[in-house]
Image (cartoon, rainbow, N blue to C red):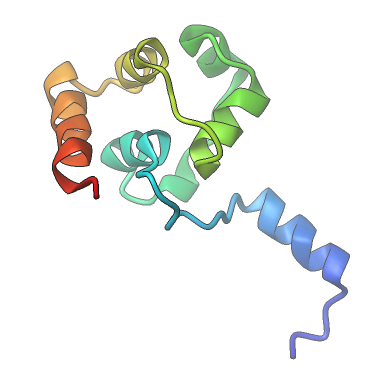
Length: 101
């Protein structure tokens, strides 16, 4: 055992942004961050990011965890803000269509 109180463990998971990513359908917010940052946990969004993509913190983290899907406009805005070419973003999106069950 870790000998750590449950609350402390939950707070550590929350602070380090450790989420279960293996949910269906594929998580596009996570995928697009993974294109830019090899390790998505390095991504620390700022107020400027939220303003640029037109989302609140709650909306972003719900999309990043896979609770909700990004809209087309949000997906495009995130890709543009992170400096990902639309071709790379489109290719990542196409892989979702190919591997859906």
